[in-house]
Length: 428
Image 1: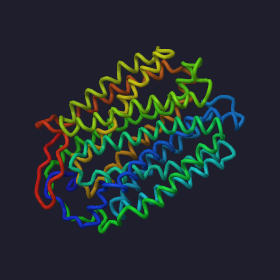
Image 2: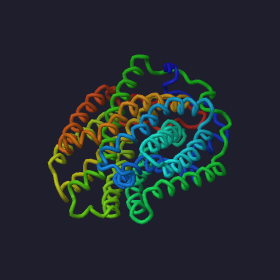
Image 3: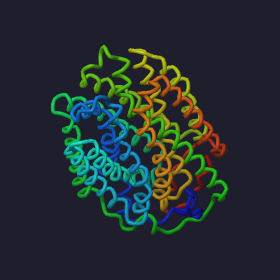
Image 4: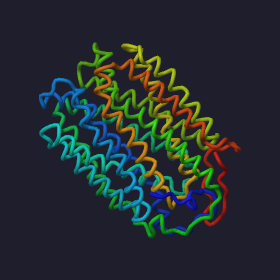
């Protein structure tokens, strides 16, 4: 997709909005469902990683590491599907795409539950990844459209997504123990379909798709746009690699290094869920800070803390590892809001879904390698080497953040201009 540099400006007069568009900026129940959708998006993609040992045993596979590569298709499609999803979100409508998300995610989850072997799992998970790809380029731009405090909105939304990760660990552990691994896919699948029915009734129809709204005047030079997009693509790719390595590997990490307390899958799920719940609240603090302080400096500080924590985790065992896991996941999750904040800052709402889809296709397409490599990497080199590798990836992320324009103002993301007025969003 060719990127139109006439679009990426969050700076001039906003296009007129109709009453349905105002409602679709999502207060109340519609906003709640958009945040629940983020939780479901992450939950669905991580049920397999949490239940992989039970699935491997059911299929007669001796080691979970040998089954893990079959989840790669889900994450490949999660990346590749983001590009058409973002395009359809801008050109067709975000509400319509969210309905496809809810119903498609639910139906594909039921297909995973019906799988009878590794390749059926691969196909059903790949289809799930395709539907899951809709949320980030469509749901988040829908939620932040016109938000006065986009950093806070992004932080709350990020918290919801990470609580979905925690819910995946908790619900999967309990369901695997008491109802079997298939139930771990059936239950959230039915919840997604139920949310789709509710969203169809609650979310107002969009009067005009985002791409068809009145254009805005260019205020950023093509060189600045290119600089920002390069930084955005590099940082989101490396951050996604770390995200996939950690969230897909943490269950087996705790099982390997806390054997005395994690033999029970339900207890393992509870402990892992607590890691994610505690770490998730970092996004609220980061979201509030993004609205107040320069984005570049905050991003550098968050990523810089990942490096020593990963190195410390490489040799930690037992409860020390557990405490370090909470700390490094807080900084992994804390880095998530920045990519969406960069898009809000530099990209006009008419094209946000397409730009988000483009960067997600690149970043998640590359980072899906983490899912494919995780099992074989840990099997051959161990978790020590995995954490050292993640520390190196975090250093590359730091280099990407350094490419962002330097701040010339005190706020990182300026509030949206008042309806019908003009405003200027200074560079971050």
